Amino acid sequence: MTTKSSPRAFGPDEHIVVEGLSKSYGGFAALRNIDMTIRRGQIAVIIGGSGAGKSTLVKILIGLDKPTSGAVYLDGVNIVPLGDTKMNQVRRKFGMVFQYSALLDSMNVLDNVAFPLREHTRLREREIRRRVLEKLAILELEGTEKKFPSELSGGMRKRVALARALMLEPEVLMYDEPTSGLDPLTSRMVDRLIEETRGRFGVTSIVISHDMAGALRIADHIYLLAKGELATHGTPAELVHGDHEIVRQFVEASGIATDQALGKPKAATIEYRR
Image (cartoon, rainbow, N blue to C red; front, side, top):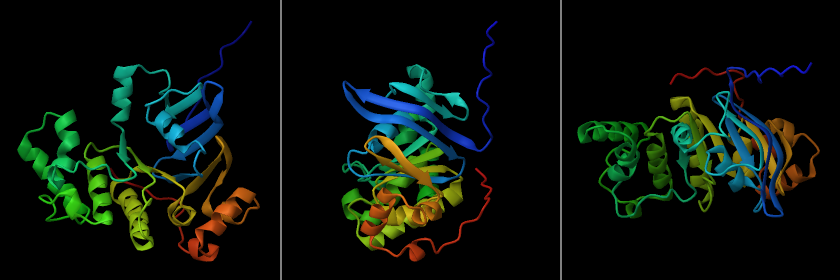
């Protein structure tokens, strides 16, 4: 007699779990057998060079693409087999901060940030404005609501994009190459912003990056992709003090001393209130 195996049990802090994830396009394997566990409230950085599979993984995590095989569990539910209606509900749990902010140049800051509320809710304009101004104030953007993206610095545009991503109160924030194209000082500001946003809003943060310096500073856990495979993963300290050749190459290319990168202590356990 064959017995049916019990469903996989998830702990309350296992927010996103990826099991055996593979994706092929014709004969090309973009991802091969990826396993990940991203815990609630963590900052997880997925790092890798061009062609490593980062973009493909992001699309699958937020339900814009389906894997060839494997599972993606969000709060214990496998989202891979879901149809369009349920998947749209799942996507509401994600906020996306795009590589170049992706603000609409023809709209001012208020309208850019209000866009998700106008598209996905039936709130009155007075309430939408109140919520937008509240988020702008939290992110130190008071007085910018009438400005257009072209009038803002790179760092301010990142914060406006973050405010927009937060408007539907997502559980997970996805950052796509958030420091790409920014000078070092602005890049470090964006790193701090990611940390502060986690602290203020209690979100789980997934950062897609090729910036090892930033990853070592802000990550609770780093996943290093190479040629579609998970080459290695661990805490910043585990990776820096390990002996993996790809990690060594990324650290050397970052141009910073590892002691400096790992100098900021992280709390072992942090509770967040939504």
